[in-house]
Length: 414
Image: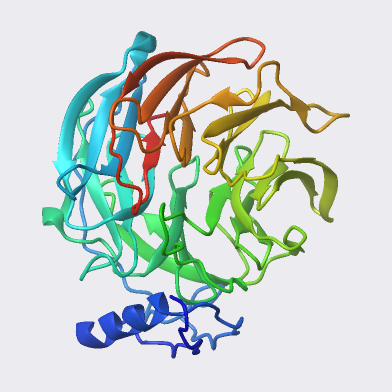
């Protein structure tokens, strides 16, 4: 990337030919910086506007998974295997097991994954530039956790995605675009799993494409609060955009009602919310907590990581008692207790040893286990038990890969 000349990319219509799209991606991956650009919006007959998507098109994708049992406890891990193929392996972690279920090979490299609340579909977004058909794909989840490609293996939508999440109610999927200033709201068809664009939210990300380095890391994230009243997009050096949310209508406005500035000389790369509408933001060298109300965001404190840390993948446990971050730089997990007076209290024994270049964390719905993934041929997937005090104890491990050029991700069942 050294010596690359920064250029502003022109907005491409969704109906543009594939060759033009690939050229745009190739140019983007050669950029070192990209000035923030407010993009023109075109109306789509909704309460807010759709950007670069003529008539807010619906996907025709379907999913037929039946894994809706309340007893499922699965973790889905994506990585690049020793043959250089991107794969997803499902694990059954019920009762402290870490039993591999099946592995599917992907025609692309994932940048984000999310399981819907019914536990019957896994949505996977591809890294821009690593696929000739970038976008969001879906996989059926069987009752035993088995993954099979849905929609004939084709992408549901072909946006260039940098981050993704599903609302807790399962009504909407949100993607942060990799190459422009947009977070897109997709309505999820409750029967088929198909996606319909229902509006674009204007944000000011400089760039949400992954860093072209080893390891490749997501540069942005997006989350919906457990109370289902806010959507927060964490946008690297552009800070964070906060939108109101309802289960019946999603986000009502195209612009955020408040913003949170990026950390000093850094960016905001990962965000999670607890049941009290506290926002935990992993920044370049800190984790900062903000309390959200209808009047805005209030800084509640921060923790400074040691030199060499690269905080990513912030997760809050279902009880909202603890928050954990993956430290890619030092290969460890930092855990905190939350509180009403002291926002962050370092847990006893924290930081905890984690897989090399640990890049993603997930907590199961029983609030019993945490899964951490990184690059290690024998222990890249690490299962921890969570004590009542929040302390993590490693109990099982499995291998991923020693290749660090591609993202390692995890998505949990609900």
